[in-house]
Amino acid sequence: MNHSSNTTSSKYSKTVVYVGREGEGIIGAIAISDVVREDAESTVMRLKQKGIKTVLLSGDREEAVATIADTVGIENDFVKASLSPQQKSGFISTLKAAGHHVAMVS
Image 1: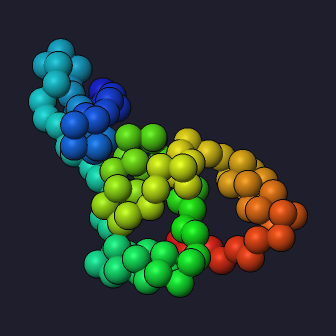
Image 2: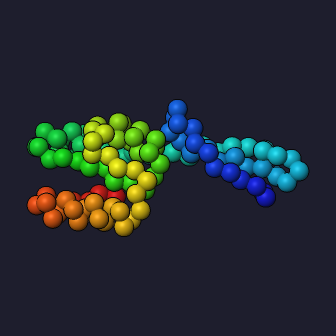
């Protein structure tokens, strides 16, 4: 395989990778998406019931992150996408400096 390209299908929030051969063009496509843990939605709901805010920080595309957030019940105000590791660290440092307690789940 000499050629591949990456595009997004925002309707389903998947990354679609098109694969081709030199001289033949595109010969196939692979759709890739994140799998949400089975208990993620109920965990976020329990945290909300206890008054704990849940923030989603991700390096992934905005469309994919929005889909995950919607699936597990995290409000858009608390969702940040396309972040570098340094940006995530800075966001967490800002929360801590403001007196918030921070826990991370990966």
